[in-house]
Length: 219
Image (cartoon, rainbow, N blue to C red):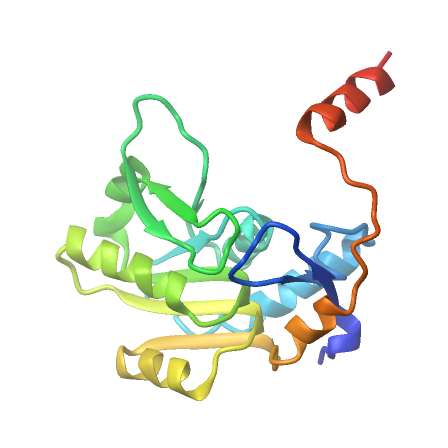
């Protein structure tokens, strides 16, 4: 349905020693402009993978900040399920469920605990929604946290636009009875080499410089 040419641009990261590249989805509308109908169609195609899979389950959809929040919302609308998303923000007075996103430049992810508390007893299955699943470790981290906090038999599903999990990672999910669905499986082995070919000759700005630029443009 989709090809790498349809979806993927490889860009170079400057601030991540764990992974030197970033996959930019050309249809997602997160990093580069896209015709909205094309982004929404891709979100809808992803949701269709699970629309009729779990009709007897009480589902909670969880999207991952920041890149998959809109995708997760679209999936939740399609399957008519409650929706929350992870965050990296700090809200005074809130208690969080912390876990880590291992390959990210901002590794701390968290869920507002009161949100989970309010719906966990009405949930049979949690569907995690990502734009890209690389190893699956992030989702396993949060599943472990939820399992330790809530002594309830919950089923899990992970869906994503892109998936680059290897056979060993997929086997771990299979053994844990975690379903996996995706629009396209990719082999990211050569992406680091691609990113290394890019010249570091761009113009760089500090946060202060960008803020000043933004303030001046409003005058």
